[in-house]
Length: 242
Image (cartoon, rainbow, N blue to C red; front, side):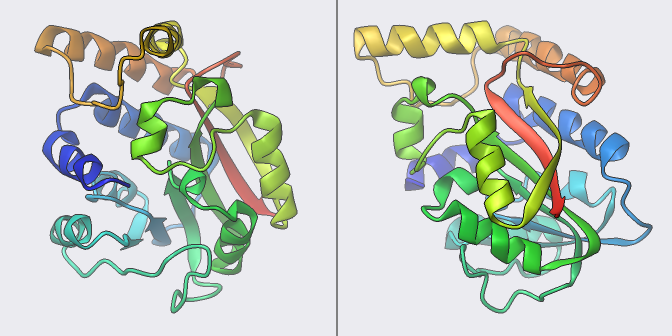
């Protein structure tokens, strides 16, 4: 990702509505769907500044990987131990057969060979282990945001399922999320395309609007995995060895 993306993440990951509400949605989804063992071993790959690590630590002992040095330093401080730097798709040096849960949250779209990356993650799972995957949805929503984040693609449900199955995994609980705010997000992308306006600035909006968006998105913690979500900005699933 561009340096400015990491810088903005470090500045806003504790206050921006998207980060705050998404952590709650993911935590509720894991609680209901993952059925992790006590003292689960968890690895987050591509942890950025480590803003998801406290949430994941509710479920077990967490390790993390981040290839950007500045973001890795922040994440290491948050985690209280060194964060690794093993790159995808190979994951060199990462323990094979070692983890009950691997989290890749808006990461797989950054990897040219997503199938190889998912296959390497599968090799790092313990028996019964799972991969928590979140990716951006809808290639037609491609924008400057995807460019500065160095995305290779956005996914549809079928393209994500194909990659998961080609890696020797099967999907479970596949669902859209960030759905309630989807009309606003779609309108913003279309408007940006028509006007040529760069929409890569993901700083939080004014405080009242930031709070409103957070409340709306957070409602999905009660819906995702329980109610079919017909469309959304992102796709979420658990994948496990086939």
